[in-house]
Image (cartoon, rainbow, N blue to C red; front, side, top):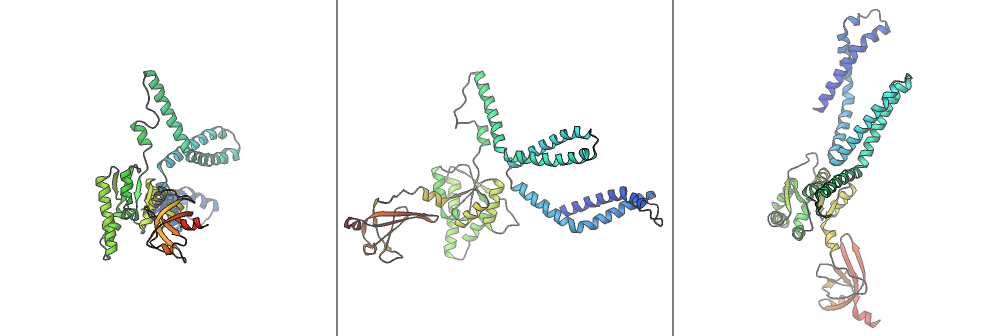
Length: 378
């Protein structure tokens, strides 16, 4: 549809140019054998329209591609960025128009013709960039003016405003929490239900329709393990929707031009200006590269684990041998793995160990220790 509109625009433009200038061009060239084009200007319009139509076959594809790129950028950009950028552009164009009025009174060819065009482009671009980059300061300026007027009105009426942190509903809607978009892995994991129960998550949980379809596909799998994982994910969603105090919304937005579910999640987070909630390491990296905010359940789990410092004593049970000779492996109640140097002889027994070092990785926390008897022997 856009291609046809552009072609129609070029044909009409070519017809107008041909109607106005082809007769004058023929008269300037002074072709004696040519008919009198001034008596038939519509012939020039037809010739101009045909020439412009032929030219559209190689230029219209580039224009359509460029317009689609601009459209995608505008759709993915936050509303505040587009709004303040547009306001800055309009302000810059108005200033350029006001500046060009005195310049038009000067009868210098270059100044009166080229300078206004340059000023229009320069001030329009400058206004757009200022409005786009200063959007946060402009928002704070309007908010401060609004709060100041409320305080002044309250003082005149002898009333008290609520303390900071207890804003009215209108302020809450302006600073509403960003939506949290769940991916398939974090739903199947199940810990998101416990996090919602604690009340640490605020705002709306978004369940995309394509994530539900992937869960249903997993639940219908012929593989027993995948089928159980899919059904567990559906049960977790029902529990969150019915029993948890947080609002849950099923979002039917889909992107037909994207096949991968993770790519759809990233684009949906850009469109909605929200967070992606996941425990997928690869999806976390992709979101970081594309500037999308992420809430990783694994990071939260690692953050709330008890801090263990070198030199502390722990009472653990060595359950298996480690990768290196004479190593034993134990676990804390939260699942943190402890590598006990020289602990192979204590497999199946309770032992007092002394922490030597702690290694924090993206996959979790690992503690290295040695039996306390070794420390006493030294």
